[in-house]
Amino acid sequence: MIPGARVQAAIELLDTIIEAAGNNGAPADRLISEYFRQRRYAGSKDRRAVRELVYSAIRACGPVPESGRAAMLRLAQDDPEILGLFDGVGHGPAATMPDEPVAEGGTAPEWLVERLSKSDIWGEEAEALLGRAPLDLRVNTLKADRATLELPVAGGHLAAPQGLRLPAGTQVEQWDAYKNGQIEIQDHGSQWACHALNAKPGETIIDLCAGAGGKTLALAAAMENQGKLLATDTDRGRLSRLRPRAEGAGAGVIEILLLNPNKELDMIRGWPTMSENGGVDAVLVDGPCSGTGTWRRNPEARWRLEDRQLARYASVQSYLLELAAKLVKPGGRIVYITCSLLDEEGRGRVQSFMATHPNWTVDTLDLPIGRIRSQGTRLTPFHDGTDGFFIASITSPC
Image (cartoon, rainbow, N blue to C red; front, side, top):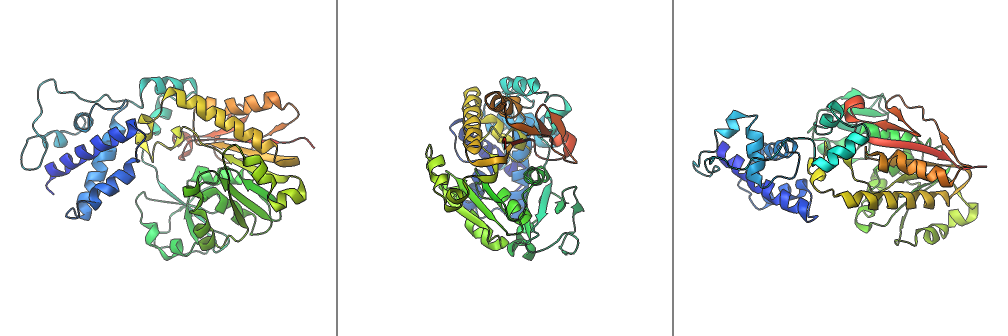
């Protein structure tokens, strides 16, 4: 593909991504993969170049662009070389016209910029949300140790005990260490979110919103495969990916339970270990959220959010905290995590929970990264080089 054809391909992809963002369609990475699956003639260099153009254009736009062409013209304002390819030659984009629409820049749609600002995410904090995320790994201590594991690329040691950081785009999926479960891809902030639960061997723990199980696997390693670890979720598709991952990681302590919405409590109470002990030592609550802390990886996600969705997320988050409170035994603990930087999904949910559970205690987290945010700890891309997280630990009365 000539350079102009790459720009035109990026414009076509951006049109598809913008449309998908408006109707809750497939995410950008899946749309890009499908695009090139239908165009086998594009070589690996072409695919990388087009993908880079697409994501650069997405990051360059704040509000949802009018079109893929408008988004690319916004990127071209900062890159004269791209603007010069709008010449109509070959398969390249048509020449620009006077007063042609150009997408607006910025961090996000204006309403969302205001909400972030109210949560003290503005200026450099906000700009960092659209940076490029590094590739972080967690060495799986059920099979290896960071001190002795040899990898094709060594990576830099992170503050997390088994954390490594590699350049973005490193093809770790091709490494033997990845295929045999010695390493897992996990953001540095996510690793500390798991550490916050302080899981110990022999405990009984529930990962209430396990999804595909990234945090579940980290908990299993912390428990040294001793005790009971129940991974639950209402999403069959995501939860189905956990079993093969657990087997590959050697995490035999994990049990899996698919839940029916609004019947979670009865189903979990039917778990034999739960009925035997009358409660668990700890529950990890990593519920659905707006994902504002993950825009470095999914920049088009900010085009998918609507104001009314935030109220729904907050309602679900409070519901999950109440559910977790019914599952822990006296003296048990809940760690609440959200990969959002909006206070209404973080400290607001903890404040609401504590208002109706005054006998519970909010614990001070001893983390080497992050800053105190009311009754929890906040991690941000700008200050901590991680995805954005709010983490809080709450203990039930004895």
